[in-house]
Figure 1 (cartoon, rainbow, N blue to C red):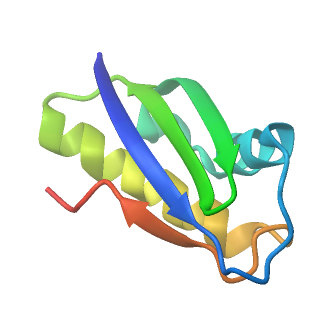
Figure 2 (figure 1 turned 90 degrees about the horizontal axis):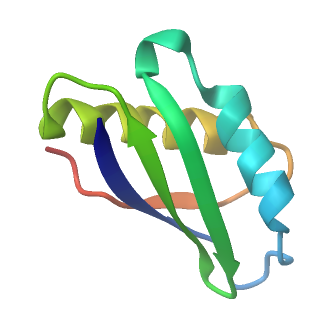
Length: 91
């Protein structure tokens, strides 16, 4: 299992989003092949920071899977318009 930290950045004009909304968006974006076991997220004025525990063959795969989940969540969620994935960097 791998631990991957991630950062989501929001536009300055965007309203604050509670942790439960962020978590729901992330879990809804997860696919079984992503290997996500656990997610934690902490909202901030600039967006959110979080961690994902993933089952993956190596650290690079875990980072790639985390990035994919975050990108899908941001693309699908109506509550997160204009938000972007700020990290982790691509492996």
